[in-house]
Amino acid sequence: MPELPEVEAVACKLRAAEPWCRIVGCGQFRPTTMQGGGRAIGQRIVAVDRRGKHLLLRLGNGCFLRVHLKMTGNLTVAQDARMHASTVRAWFALDDGRAIVLDDPRALGRISFHEKGSEDGLFAGLGPEPFDAAFTLDHLVRAAKATKKPIKLLLMEQKAVVGLGNIYAAEALFQAAIHPARPAHRLSRPKLEALYTAIREVLGAAMSSAAMAYERPGEFSEGESFPAAVYGREGAPCLRCAGTVRRMPQGGRSTYYCPKCQK
DNA sequence: TCGATCCTGTAG
DNA sequence: CTACAGGATCGA
Image 1: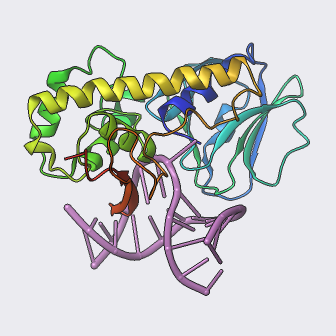
Image 2: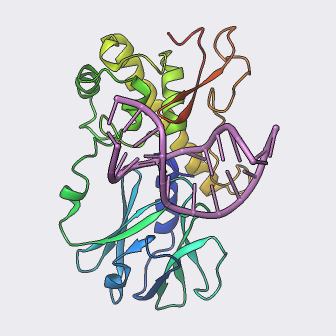
């Protein structure tokens, strides 16, 4: 599921289940999934926030639970805490009988409890939100000029900007017509400007698509967002030129791109 | 900086 | 069986 648009959709869906009753219990099925969940017992969730791909469940006393969905996680509200799928890895029971459950087939998702005011330390390594005023073209240019690593890897580091993963990084680079392996510091300012615009457009389109899927369920498949222009299209014709989409390994992941129009 | 690693499921 | 999957951290 989750790059930024999908995480935001999960947050929206959780907010729709407000107001929250008190947390009366929690559980997990392996020791690594959740750290300190028991410390949230007795508290009430007062807000659901998002920072990059992290979900923050704010508690009444200022502390918070941080949830990272990793590759396949989903955080949902179950009407009955006693029933759950085999892929549920952790849960919080609420006073009204409902439960917040981490459903995650691959079991890579993580939940952790954090003290009031520990956000700054916890997220010190994260870059700006893509739609925040702090994410400027100059910021992206500075980040790009500072490293020789391939631009796609820079985009996926969550340091120059947060929220892009394997799909949207590829989509943004395609839209900006930039080769994913280009050393970041060698990109011209105009190219970086195109990339800057593309990042916002790609994420923005995915977010409205995710919101649409939420408002009108059934018309769009759950979780999946809009059709990708390059991702997963190896061997298919490029949507912009006469080229053919290729796949190449990058940092242990698959990168999709058109070698003809992404230089 | 790069590969290995965490996990399970699915497709070929 | 192998390859691969929308993430991120860790040790060599």
